[in-house]
Image (cartoon, rainbow, N blue to C red):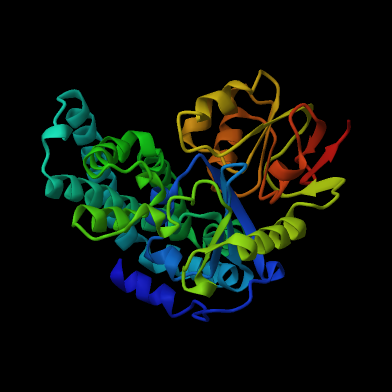
Amino acid sequence: MEKLNKSLNRKLNNGLNKELNPSDYEYLWTDHDVNFIFTSCYLFKEFRDTDIVLIYDWKNKGLKFFLSKKDKLKFSEFGVIFYQKHFPVWKTSVLSNIQLGKKIIQTTNNDIIKLNISSMSNDELKNKILERANLFQSLGGNYFYTEFFFLDKVEELVKSSPKKYAVVVKNLKEMGTLKFEARKILNEFYNYHKIFQPYIKEVGKRMKRNDLPWLSYTEIVDIIDGKNLPISNCISDRDHVNWVLAKANNWHIIKGREAEKIMNEFDNHFFNVSVKLIKGTIANKGIYQGRVKVVRTVFSDNINEEIKKVEKGNVLVAETTGPEMMIACQKAGAIITDEGGLTSHAAIVSRELGIPCIVGAKIATKVLKDDDLVEVNAEKGTVKIIK
């Protein structure tokens, strides 16, 4: 994977400390119910080398992701090379990380059941935290190459000439299976309460701190090692202020008025717009009318409450779907997602279920509201609000 990362890095924009202009970026997704441990783990090498902007809206408890248009284009071009030449190396790496992830999940469950955590030394707790953060980052780095922004040109090629690119077709199909397995593991790591909290909670007791979920995992390790990181260091307010992290600012956290300004500029550019017709990519054909249910991407047990909102025949609107949303997908009369391509979970599931699906609708979750009556025209790739 190291050679693969170097190959990709040569294609990325390395500019730093520039003005953040919303028109230079594309909206990716919003993750809800996350903390700063999640954020610090998510900044794995592939992300840190990419021109990405993260904006945390503390009132909505949502972390928005934006990718530069230049890097999105480079990823799309590199995706062709990746699925032709680098897939075998990736496959070996992701299979190894999936197995390690399963082992860590089982170990965590055993530690909880056997009440082992309180008797662990500080070094043992530190190693548990680092082991989980390292797996999160390594498997997250694998998953990065399955994201929709790597697949645009690849999917165009195999659609235009499937026989010529038979190997790529095979690799894409195998990637789809491995992606779902990886996502199942990652969902456990994304949910702070399942994998990290048992150990972080014990560290908090010993260090007499309640702000640890809003520190990075490296800051927590520093505290365990005895380094002075006082609560008064303006760290503990990360859960109730807006903040921004960006490659353009060398990943230094921006808070206060500057963060507020950036967030407003991005929100006004991407979301505060009047849209009568939403357009996307046809993943499975058909025409359907129904009431909308918007399911947020939630990385906590609250995802169950989101899924419960979907009733039989609703139009499921989500930023993306994954294995955790299968019950909602099975109830839906149609599916619309902000992101994804022809090999995304929503696309594959909709074809299996035989329901219309439009992916890559970009801001459907921001424009559509629960109980809106819409027409999903997956013959034309459009969504129209009827009422």
